Structures are given as C-alpha cells and as structure tokens.
Image (cartoon, rainbow over all chains, first blue to last red; front, side, top):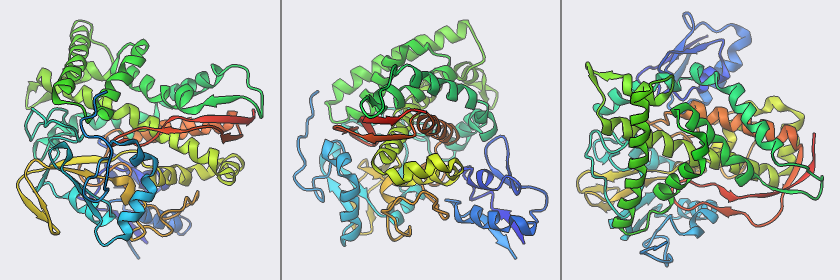
Length: 64
Length: 405
C-alpha cells in the first residue's frame, strides 16, 4: 500500500499529520507531504485509511 | 442597541441569523431546512441575504470564487469599503490571485509545528484560570465556564501573539462583539465603532514601529510582497482579521464543548476514563458544534439553482449546518465521541481554510483537557445564553462542579 497527497487539493487542514505522523509530514506553510515514497507498512494500514477518511478536501489517496 | 429589523416572522423568506432564537434553536432550524424541499433561506434584510443549509450547496459556494467574492465575510447593514481582490482584512477578505500572496505571508507563523510550541503557555493559562475560580464545594459550587474560563483563553493567547497588552482583554472582546454581533445597527453606528478599532490598532502599530519585537505585529511590519513592505491598511486589516477571527470563534468552540460534556455525562466519563479518545473527540466537537458561519457577497446577478441572487447580496456559508447534514454524515445529528470518519468543514472548505485552525485546535484541546482534569464530574445547571450572529457558542454557561481532582 502507498499513500499520496494531491497538493492542489490540500488546504492544510492538518488532519493526516495529526492522525498518521508516521506517514505524513507538513511543510512550513502547513501543506501535507508524504514521508519517503509513501509506502505503508502493514501495521500502519489502518492509520492510512483513517487519514483518507478524515481529509475534508479528499486530497489523500491510497494505491493498493 | 438599535436593531433596525426586529423579530423574524418567517425563516424561509424573512431569515435573520442575528435574532437570538436562531442560535438557540440552530440545530432544529437546520434540520428543518435540510428535510424540506427548499434548503435555501432568503431575506430582504441587510440589503439582501441568502442562506443555504445543505453540505452540497455550502461546498459549492465555498469553491466558487467566480460568482462569489470574499470581499465581505461578516453580514451587516453596510458593504465593505475596500474592494476585492484585497478587501478590508486580507487574506480572509481577498480573492484570487491576491489571496494566495497575502495568505502565504501568514501561513508560516500559524503552521502546525510553530503553533505546537505554544502548548505549555496555553496549558499554564488554563490552569491559572481554574485556580482563580477559588474554593470549590463539590455538588454545590457553580462556576460560569464561558465567562470565568472559555472567554479568557483565546483573547490572552492572541494578544500575546500580536504583542498587545493583555490587560486590554476587555477592550478586545468589546471590539469583536461590535464587529460580529452588532450587525443589525445603522451603518453610521457601525462606522463609528470600526473607527474606534482602527484608531486602537493604528496606535499599536505605531508603537511597534518604534519598538520592534518578536511578535506578529512586528512580523507583519517586516514582511514584503515583491520587495515592497505592506501598506498600513494591509497590516491593520490583517490584525483586524487575527483579532476578530481568533477570539469569539475559539471561545465558542471551548464553551460548546464544555456545554456538551455538561449535558452528556456518558461522554464526559469516557473522556475522563480514556483521555486518548481526545484525538477523535476533538474533531467531533468541531463537527457537531462548529462555531463559524462565513459569508460571501454575490459578484454579479447570478441564478443559483433557481435562486435569483443579485449583485452585492450577502450569502451565508453555514459550515456548522453542513457538518450536521444527514446527506453527508452518517448519524449526522448524533455526537459520536470516537467517530472514525469525519471530514467536517468546521474550518471551512476550499482556499479560505481557517488560517488559525492549528491554534484553535490546540486551544480547544488543552482547554477541554484541563477543565475535565480539574473537574472530572460536572453538569450544566442554570440558564445558558448563546451568542448572536455568525459565531455560535454559549456566552453564559453555569456549570455545577460535582467533583474536583
């Protein structure tokens, strides 16, 4: 599993970083970025799904 | 007070969010509109006003910067004097493309990591306010969680961030009350109190020019757009934004969350027993009790799904109603303390996402944590009064303390 952030859609709500700081970081402007290549270890798959389910802008994607 | 409109006779065609009944019965009124075939209210008040109540319509307007301008964001009897794309309080009153330029100046001081550093200060402030409540007799003592607690937290934090005297706390609350709640007074009266706010800020800005220091006011005086320092109007407008948007909003969110816990003992017990549920509870407080309704002005005459909107009509963006729309949220009208899927729009949707959302979230989280840590058992006991206008929250919140930790 890999997570992605659509930087055009992200408005800096910061929900993904709050829920899954192992998978997402934020820059100086509060915009989300994926950590590394976005690969999700098995034990963090649940957190990745939470990040998707809580992004008000639908900016987070998951590629299985 | 000189309300030029009077009581509402019909919510569909004579709508007014500044009559006390609106915020008192908000959840009922929104549900009625959402269930009706006609979810858009209209009024001739304020020179023309529309209010859609479904998530779908609120979302559509929030993203539509072609037909709706942010030049005015607080419905009132007048119209903003500084034109788009800058507007009177950049960047909240700005439209693209200037909006992004003005917003990028202010994003770094409000980014999650910079704001996280304020946590110890906010926690200390909350504990100090709890200490100042004095001797508490469990089961008997009644404290006002709005007046003795919630209202003092954001005003102190934003005053410190701006580098303004915290002893002017009462004055700031007065300014914000004038701007946000006295919306139905004659234009001349509004001009007078806006002038008082401008005069106060001009003096603070002058003082910062003479004595620059590490705060947001000096920061705004130092930043540049394309090699040019900001105009005094831009600096003052951005400070108006930070002051007005940073006080009643968070005060309301803290108050409404304590109101919820003081009327729902099971949720209070869960939060006390399982403090880690706060990760989800925080967002559910924000969804179910979002305090902020924004507004736009219609740019040119526009047919919005059959609503004949005229240029310069106001349009409310009730994000709090959108957050409780059953078409968007499962069990929308229920408070589910550990709701797992929660794409709420408490901080707005689209390009104007609340600049201070990270600060607001920190203040709300710490304020609720400290309150329940000190008073693990309490109940609302007495008459609650609610604010009027676009920001919804309790202004009097008597709470009987049943145990002290």
